[in-house]
Amino acid sequence: MFKYILGFSAFALAACAAFFSIKGIALLFSASFLSVAIMAGSLELAKLASASYLYRHWKEINVILKNYMLSAVILLMGITSLGIFGFLSDAFQRNFSQYNLNISKAQALKSQQLFITSQVDFNKTKLRDLIELQKTYQSSLDSAVKQDVTTTKTSDGGLFGGQKTEKVTDSKLLDSRNKIVEGSQQNINSLFNQIQIVTTELSNLETKASQTAQEIMVLEADNAKGEIGTFKFVAEAFGLKIDTAVRIFIILIVIVFDPLAVCLVIAFNSINKKFNSISPKEIIKNEKIAVPNLKVEEVQQPKTTGEKNIEAPAIHKDFNPNEKEYGKAEKIKQQDSILDYWRGNMLLKKRN
Image (cartoon, rainbow, N blue to C red):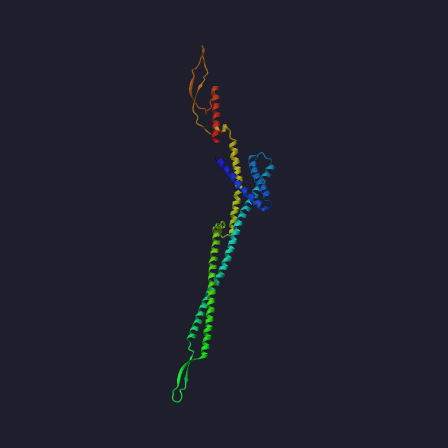
């Protein structure tokens, strides 16, 4: 069972390494993607076949061929590792570009938010000043309206009448008051319009500031829950930049990826070769199987006396086929060989 688990692990890891390597190498020559992918796939298959051949026939291969194939396997492992590094780096750069783009957008929005905040503060100050000025003009208008525009006029009553006093409207005072009232009213109306404009603008700025804050939160949330967000905390823990931390992580993957796949292929060849080299006799020697005891007849040589030959009676006793005894009858030897053949076949079936 372990042999099949090891074989499956070797095949799965080698297939993943081949896929990543083929994709990474083909990305470097994207103009001829299919052709390069076929070439890289052939090299991957040749690498695994060469590693298996070197292990199985190491003592039989010519020295020059052995050194060349060993160098080729090591070089192909390096090429595969570079392809894996390129594939993983390309995948990281795509996410990292989006991550940097989100950061740039967030910074731009924060700058815009600061400007909007300053505009909001300015408009609030302006609105407060306009309201104070409007109050001033309103007070001036109230004072002008309450201003007395009459004067006291004294008239002579004649020889027999006394002097008469009466209040009359002074035209000059009236004109002056009317001008003040008219001017104050115009100023008040103008300030009222300005206050409305500033109020509307202030409301728009506050709405825009709220929308900008929401956009910043969305961008920061995307970066936090994305693939790069996990490495951000790792990089901060070791005092590294995010791209540096990810590059180290990719290198660690590359170091164990393809070399481990080749080692697993060699290990599978080792177990397979050792299993195929075991003969039925060695299996019988190393392992014991419980078999039933057989009773066989032992043939004894007749005893010769001076007068006549007397046949010895047949004696039965327990016989254990695992022990070799000499002097047995031909029938016992045949049964022994048949039993050994049966035991060997049973053990082979049990292992398979």
